Image (cartoon, rainbow, N blue to C red; front, side):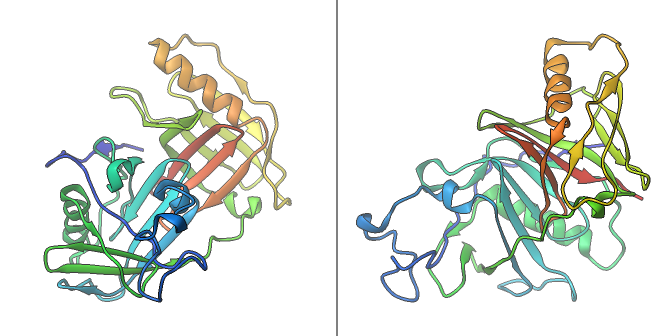
Length: 277
């Protein structure tokens, strides 16, 4: 599956606020951050493992039946407004939530009806930056006349058997709390779960094979066997080792509301996007 990077239009930035996370709210329209005594965690800690959606935007019109989706997991911010997922590492330094580099995107062809234009519109908003604001929603973003009030949605219940018959392409890697996109020029690693439970992996250098129990809710990979071709660079070798060590044994897994599959073990995490059918 091909991956492209969006062209940076400016320094990527978007500001996010969370409204009334806990009982520390000063009132029903503020998240309590105006009072330093109520601040116990930074924004990235508060955003971790959460997802937000809305189907209404003030100052803009969404394609009927579509919605804006944002999710945050293992240092990755994912956004979707059409048929593709934009994904990349993010930072909240100085109160600004932003991708730290141009995000990667899946390359599915959007059907007619304006979803492709809506996708570019959201990418432009998040690239230009959106202001954190208070409001009744869980997450409020403002840019000019555009105002988005997003509400949190519960995480889907993990179920390993739901992955059978699916194919994925690697988007980001996380190690020791550092998240990065794949380096330019590296073939995107892939992950294929056969209905039988067999798992086929390409690492960017080699082919590997493993298996999972097709009847289990948990995800336990057999130790992967792999071909022995040398990788073209030290970075490619490092990524291959990270993939093979993560996909060995019991793995935490979830598919978030933007369609991103996150597989993690300890301080390592791999974020995958669904491959086109």
